Length: 247
Image 1 (cartoon, rainbow, N blue to C red):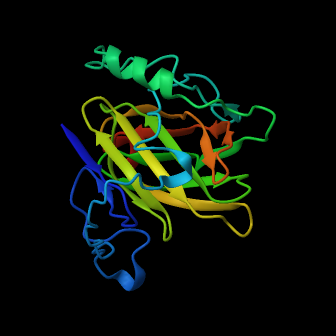
Image 2: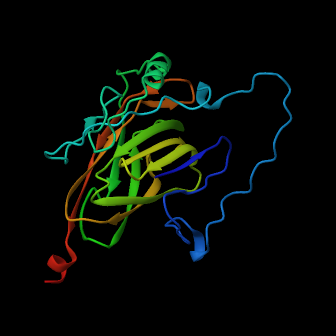
Image 3: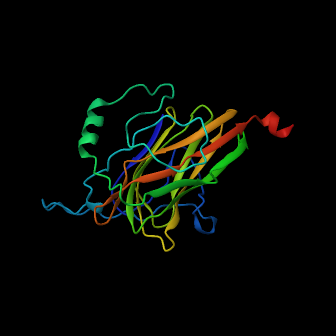
């Protein structure tokens, strides 16, 4: 099962794997209807400018094996050298991997990285309950384009939806329920204080146990074409049984 949207433009619909009448960024509690769709433009045959110098979709972040140790530190996220090992995710599209490796931009490691994290970063919740996690990015010197992936255990939690914050555009987004993978390609405006919530995840607890939330990214592209490294403080959830929570 996979919920997927793919589009270009200024609209910012909610990426979701279920139906939710209201999101954390909806004003006044009204149902989110999305932005007005743009009118299609006539094809002129001329090359059109592409966001941040990236033609089409950016390099897809690859899945990684979530760490089983301490997730409190901040580390550079993997750039696509491995994939996760959740059941049912053994197949790899070789042609896609090769094309993405060729298209990968050179990351400027001399620049400070963008730091990606969740708020709260650690939480415990009983099975059957839901929690909203804010996706926080800090350290950006201006607006940027950020491809980001997150791996989780689909047997213990379900990522129901991702809703972008006001001003953030989702160029492409997907939630793969069976394999425990969320992929986003975000266009983020500059923040006044250098840190901002770029969206919110709604997560439902399913089965008891620890759930690492591990990020991966191919780098963030600034408006001048510079590609910054991305660091992440991975999140961690612990799901308890309803009986344990009540007793």
